[in-house]
Length: 402
Image (cartoon, rainbow, N blue to C red):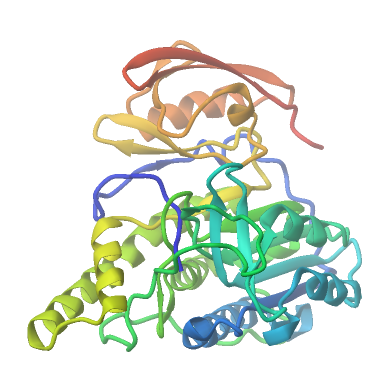
């Protein structure tokens, strides 16, 4: 499985992620009477994924049951021949959702980003061959049910491929296997199951007191999503981030996403280091098969795996920045980000905002907190360094929703 990320700094650097995301958050409406309907879409017709998907499904279900509890949670799964877009729509249509409920969809499958259109596609094998199912179509099927909150979480690659439709399915490469056996030393947190009528504070805030759309993939455009019998890197990081957020949780999905992005880097570094060492040891002892050699080389080339967000509720500006040395760099923006629409680009180095020089996360947070304190629509002027040239981008941030 491949996962997409842009070229980012060397793993292990302590990136200081600025909370530009959280500045100006919309107030969350309490909806404690709602339930969470979780749908797992697991492409078990892809035999190379089966062991990883079993572990992924176990981790995600344990996470949700431990944080939400049975009284507020309903879990269902699509596997095998059920994994088609039509099968998902039919399944969603049978859920007794109300407008007070949250709908969470976890997808474990191959995926890629189309080289021409830059659209992300999930590869479903329920029909007997891999079919491109555009991410936009999956999200539309989910939001069509009209739930208060819709969350799409996918552990899929985002490598650049030609996702052309043909009789033989899309023509893509499949990498991303970390190894065929589990390696010791990974460790993980174990959720204790929540009492039936007790929802942990972090989960309540994210799932029962928030509305809107959240859409996150476990890889950034142009990179692989790595997996092994220990589960996908993204799913392991997701599990740990939720574990750490269950009691003293984030203020909302924007802050949670910043935590998840950081955890992704740490999880990938740990697993990558261990598997590279195992590949080298095996190569010295008995050599590697062609498939193992291809995975080994791809793993050496990909220094980082991180997340990409397409939609993120609870924030008005929707910009993720990270500190690189003495600079703040734009590293992620949802598709509905007003900054993206205004022309801000991933990779831009932030020089100033509204004339105030920006050198670190604290300065950026202070400027944005003051500017976004009003509920009215505002203009933010970013001065950025883009490929060695200074550019100015004016962003119209919409009024805060009541």
